[in-house]
Amino acid sequence: MAEFLMPSLGADMETGTVVQWLVQPGARVNPGDVVAVVETHKGAIDVEIFLDGVIGELAPLGESLPVGAVLARVAVAGEEGTSAPPAALVSRAAPSAIPSSVAGAPVEAPAAVPALPEMPAATPQRARVSPAARRRAQALGLQPDALRGTGMDGSVTLADVERAASQPQPAAMQAVAPQRVKPVGFDAAQMRQAIAAAMSRSKREIPHYYLAETVDFAAAQAWLDHWNRDRLPQDRLLSAVLLLKATALALRDVPQLNGFYESGQFRHGDGIHIGWAIALRGGGLVAPAIHHADQKTLPELMSALRDLVQRARAGGLRSSELTDPTITVSSLGDRGAASVWGVIYPPQVAIVGFGRVLSQPWVVDGQVLPRPVVNASLAADHRASDGHLGGQLLVAIHRALQTPQDL
Figure 1 (tube, rainbow, N blue to C red):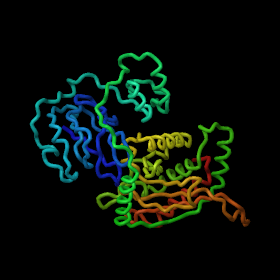
Figure 2: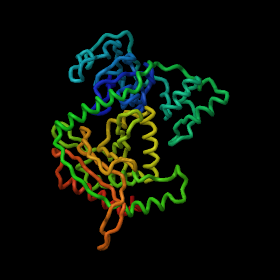
Figure 3: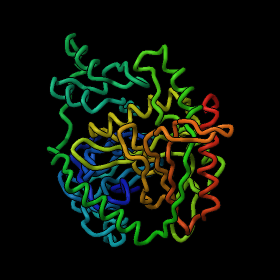
Figure 4: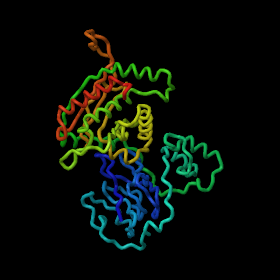
């Protein structure tokens, strides 16, 4: 039996609480399926599983479990295993000190999980459903995963739920009450304490170095104004998207800043997954990943960014978005300060910051003219790189923004 463990949803997470199971024992799961909702100080997170098999025993709801504790056992393909009693799944020890009875030693069990060939047909993969739509569907007694979605990538929206509620529903769409407990709710003070602890540890353990570059934003601003001129508001781009794409392309040139410092050495990320810092309503901060940001077009990035901000503030992030950002970008926006100096989020090795776009005197062809500029900063880990490489990254960002049509 393979073990599905409580994931680490960031360096500032120590424990999590399963508030809802979206699968039951005997259910078939595939890599990427969302199987549980785990509440942390960042809110309720949809947790994905990356095992292929059949669910055995599940940890009970409502228990605060440390990162690395066993949440479920899974009979993987071709394996016959036994299910463990719930008590064996709930270890309050630190991940490195989980008792042998949890870590895989034989335990007695009343029933065996059948081998996969004997299982019925695989259950459909869970649909993408916005948090507001899922809550509304449950309130109306509908099964949100059975509804037809009209949102981005076929996701089910609140409008889809309301439309379905006004029509007679077949039995398959009637909701089966999932196993769940009432979430505690967002606690801004707890989040700030967790962030402070993680950032204090980062400053204490990581040898930061800092660099800055003032970026001429005139070409980017002119291109952006032209792009947005005849488009509807929902199709317009923000300057943040140009900064995001320029950073992603610059990381292709300087991959030494895209990855993690673990076990005394640098490990390259498997893609350019930019963690975008999002301020939460009521206080707090989260930086989920936009995956493969360098491969997306500007409209695709704008759509992904809008979706990410909406879900972050509504409590609908997925675990994969919190576990694999390879670098963090913090943009203060039009109402922010002129510049920002970040603290590295371990195990990442760098964070890029952008202030608001300012009009400043700038020398153009020997003349001093007013020019839109943005201050870019870099905080990087001296164990993984040095100022020469860091400077190359900032220069590459500056260079990319001079040809916005190529972003």
